[in-house]
Image 1 (spheres, rainbow, N blue to C red):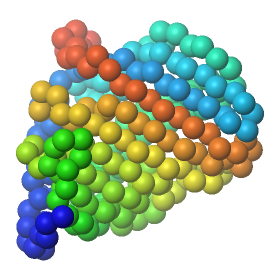
Image 2 (cartoon, one colour; image 1 turned 60 degrees about the vertical axis):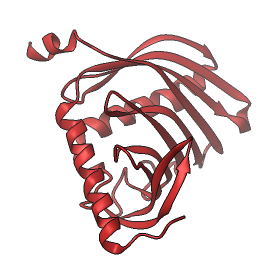
Image 3 (tube, helix red, strand yellow; image 1 turned 90 degrees about the horizontal axis):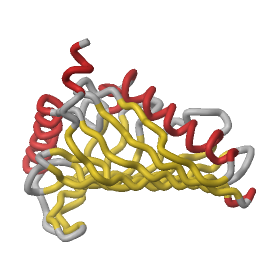
Length: 216
């Protein structure tokens, strides 16, 4: 991996923040399908939920459930709790959770290749132990300066029933946007042991009907 000066690393972070802000400013309503696989290995319970995920021009996230297969405990205590937490976090604490220098310290690790594209690799650590923030790694696309992967663990557990929440989030660059591709999470709980959650995102499309809905 190539070395980068301190000024060079700071410039990368500035470009990354500018690209993220540009994405926010130019964002349009979109939809994508999600398939959420949940598992509670200790209880030998699994479940799979298929849904349509909508993001409005204002960043509001909603889900339309299209089907579910598997155990109701997984649906109720794992998948439904995740969806509720994501919706609440994005609507109420979006700015406070952003991976930016306001909330995180960035440590440049080098340039490398990830899934066939050149990327900048940073280790990130939150400046405050706030719910929703994580300690781990961030990979930034060298061409667009948009994020393509995040991984780590939450520094503050959202519930007393959770011991540790670790995750990897993968993104793809579509139409100048960094959109979710896959999320893998492992949660150590106090009641049922290990919980596993994997989300695959597909069929990303702009939602032209949302402009009308937001205007009402």
